[in-house]
Amino acid sequence: MVSLNLLMLVIMDYFFLVPAPDTRQKTGSFSARHVDVTDLDLRFKDVAETFNKQQENYKQMKEMLQRISHRYQLSTNDSLSQCMKKIKEKHDQPYIGLEVKGYDFTLVVRSEAEIPDGLKRTQEDITELSKYAKGVMSVGTKLQEMIDSLLQAEEGITRQVEEAQSSHQERKRLVDNLKENLREAKRAKELSPTYRNEAGDLLKEVAKLSGITP
Image 1 (tube, rainbow, N blue to C red):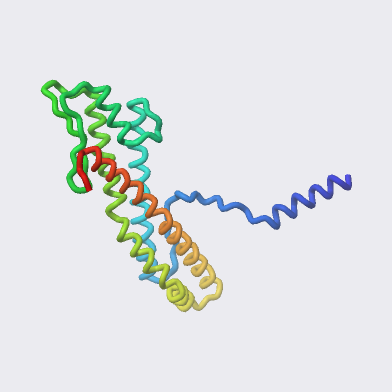
Image 2 (cartoon, rainbow, N blue to C red; image 1 turned 90 degrees about the horizontal axis):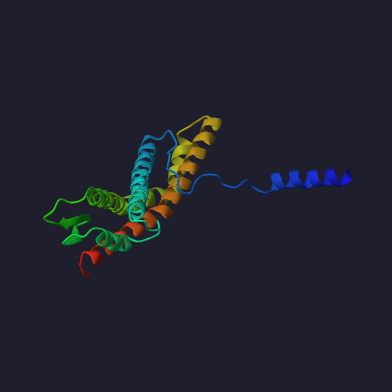
């Protein structure tokens, strides 16, 4: 009985002393909390919406590449280069290649015969892949600037929120909301370049496949 009681005390000490793991998904969306300062609420809302849009485009970009890989029985980790190789092997057409215009790219098929349905779906998917990659890239610089302008003024905006409320309880709640918004902004600042780098690597790969040299 003594040993059982001791074990229970050790278990209780563990749960009270060891901080609970952060269960928030690192890749989750940014939900801006209300801080009751109109300008700050709008700025955090803009950051959240811009980041969430970029994140969704990133997820769709990855899923589209996986869909193409799966169609040609490749590993989900295979590159677009591997996909293009398989596409050309499977579809016996006079010409299959990528065409690039700015951030947009398409799968071009030149054939006198009707293009097979499977290849048409791949063309559609690559057009979608292009759209999502462009969506990731297009907001990168703007988003970093928006986040930096908030993080660099952290002390000042904290004071704004504190001074806007006379009630101690309400002030504490809103400052806690602000701290959570700043934590989320820092998370977005960390993740956004990762999304942009992956989209940029995809576009470099597309450029190489299409014959464009730097």
